[in-house]
Structure formats: C-alpha cells, structure tokens
Image 1 (tube, rainbow, N blue to C red):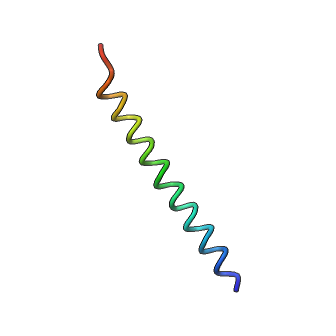
Image 2: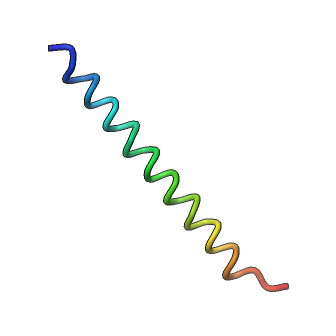
Length: 37
C-alpha cells in the first residue's frame, strides 16, 4: 500500500502550507495594526 504514506505526506504538506499562510496573514495584520507612524 504505497498510497498511505503519500497521502499522509500530501496532507502534512497541505497542513504546513495552511499554517504558514495563516502565520503570514497574522504577521501582516499585526504589523499593519501595531505600526505607529
């Protein structure tokens, strides 16, 4: 059954990408809100 590790790897990469994008959005919003000119 070679599709089990491949599916797990794909799911892990997808989750990592989603977490990374969420972290990027959070960082951008944090910088936008807490930036004092």
